[in-house]
Amino acid sequence: MEFSIVKFFVLAAWFFCGIALLDKMNSNPAKWNRGDTGGASREFLTLFFGPVFFLLSQQDSSFVNSLKNLFNRGKRTIKYRDITIIDSHGAPMYGTDCDNPAIDKLKDVIILAVAKRASDIFLDPAGERMQLRFRADGSLINIENFTADFGDNVVNAIKVAAGMDITEKRRPQDGSFAAECSGSSVAFRVATVGAFGGEKVAIRLLGSEVGPKTLEDIGFNPEQLHLLKNAVGLSSGMILMCGATGSGKTTTLYALINNIDFSLKNVISIEDPVERVIPHVSQMEVNAKADITFAKLLRNALRQNPDVICLGEIRDEETAQIAVHAAQTGHLIISTVHSNDSVDTLDRLSNLGIPFRSLAATLKVIVNQRLVRRLCEHCRQPLTEIPDRWKEYFSYCRFPADHIYAPCGCPECNGTGYKGRAACFDILVIDASLRAELEKENTSLSQIKTIAEARNAANSLTYHAAYLAASGVTSFEEIDRVTLALDGGIQ
Image (cartoon, rainbow, N blue to C red; front, side, top):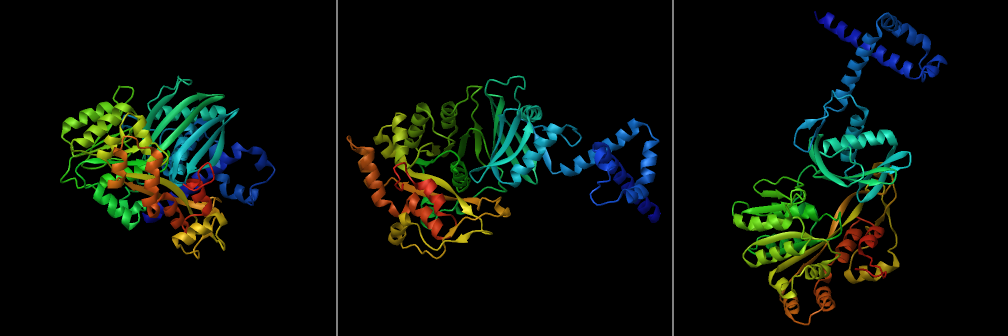
């Protein structure tokens, strides 16, 4: 009995190998007719697989096609067994039995994007081609080009998964879908817009990390860590995070929320969209199509008796005013603001109609954040001399210069010299001196900035970035990129 089973599997393997070989021969007959078989002689192949060829040649073509389809379905099942695409309604779709090259390519793109730790996927029309690019570690990577027709099919597969109208190719559309890929859950936020030559697609990957980050994982130094843990324990006030798009504000926001004692505090989060599910937190999602805005959800959240309200972003006057009012009436507000630095955050809120006096009464901490690329540890090269513009600063800060490296490039980092990213911070505490300055009737941002810089030198963005360079984590090119101002000075 055992011999029969073994013989069956051997014959089955032999048979399917013959099918695969026949398929290759049919796909490129000229190559096989001239004997170019990649090192294997035609005589050996004829002797070994001859009976299979003979058997297949005697069968009806539909039988051969059925065997090929069975073989291809088996290959597809093995290749895509670790990925499940979930549509915008939460239902699984595009299973392994879905024989469509565009859908297979979509799965390949998702698997590769997760493997390369990409934050964004771009499909851009380029004449008769469509270009696929990833943004990984803040840099764009060219992946491959499709024909325009095949690219349109891939775009349609994405739009169907995201619950979008595939017949509308000119007007901007937004949608989302998700995927279970290699044990991790990844959400995708999709935006399409008509462009010259076709349709442009941008996909943001949300929550692709293996697990949520804690404040310790983010990269705060011990003093900053102690400060923020005390801040999230406050009963009222505002904690704001600022920085450019893609600077990691949302990741830090989730880390702050996870540091709250949920057994003591009722926490409500308002997001656009919800990027990661947090146990014990009531998460609400903005929906512009249904006229569910940040302001409306925030006003409703105040009726739920919350202790802490997390806002994904303060972006308009109404939301800013409600948030400040909530912070003045016994709620802790944690949110993000799009601004360049801590002082610009004050200016941004002032432009949204919040008086400096109200900010003095409610603001507790502003965290300014940037991301720098980490040097690849496999190929980084020691740097023997500090650049002239940094010598004086390193001497002033008493940073050592014996662990400074420069990027090189290797296969491990795709030739970029960098792999992964690290965060650097500028934390501004609204203490008594700043509060007094904000309460003055004739105060100005320049005066506030002078006071902030004088008392925050050891916690500035430049200081933290330079410390990362001195520790061999990043390069001077990277800290120049995130700290140099337009006038050539250091922020």
